Image (tube, rainbow, N blue to C red; front, side):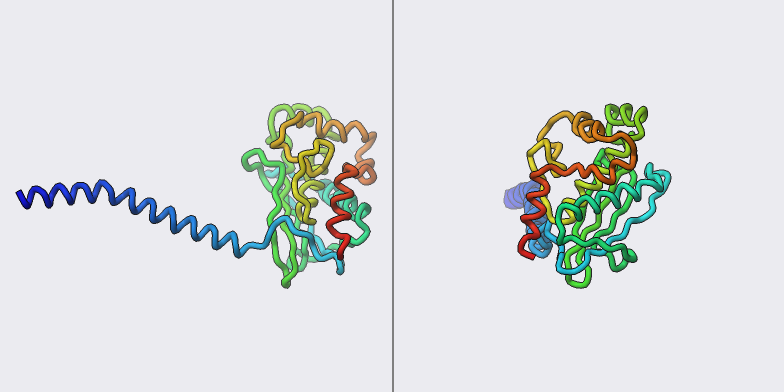
Amino acid sequence: MAANISWQKMRQFFRVAPICFTLVFAAVALAAAIRARAQQPDFPRPLDATQSVTYFISDGSKQSGYRPSDKDLAQWALEAWQRNEKKLRFQPSPESSAFIRIYWVSSEEGQFGETRPLTIGGRPGAAVYIQPDVAALGPDLGRAAQSDPLLRDTIVYLTCLHELGHALGLEHTSNYKDIMYFFGYGGDIVAYFGRYRSQLHSRNDIATVSGLSSADVAHIQALYRAQ
């Protein structure tokens, strides 16, 4: 009987043990994640505008949907923010010393773009990833952009503008008029881009039609007012 009881206890232990180990590992993983998050700086965060903000715009691959003229769109997006916040002075530089680094990437889960924090020489910076293959962003946008090259450039330009807003320290908003609007709040995405597209007569108009709302401008100016 004693041997039988011991065997039953052992069976009970082995049934419970996996659950215990899972809970322990989950607790350890959660603690590690909290520690890692605590060690990361808050993001988005404003850049140091007391000096020139250096930037680098990479070339992209044909497989990503990149076109050489997309560099113009990224450049115009930088200039739009600079025109509306005079403390921002952008200056091109090699990649290794750039505080803003813009890259062109292939489609990943239908994302328009992404911005990640960098630290360069103790100063905050950001890596900006833009998805230039508009056809990969959904059939509605893909069909519309296929028949309208200016709509395609509109989408890439506004994506650059939005992600650079994060690089400069701005968060998402719930205002459909803003370039920092988050599509997670809903709304007609095709119409969102079409609103800007309707202001263009030629591609060169993108250089002067900023796409920023009055609220976007107020937010960027308030963010850098103290510097």
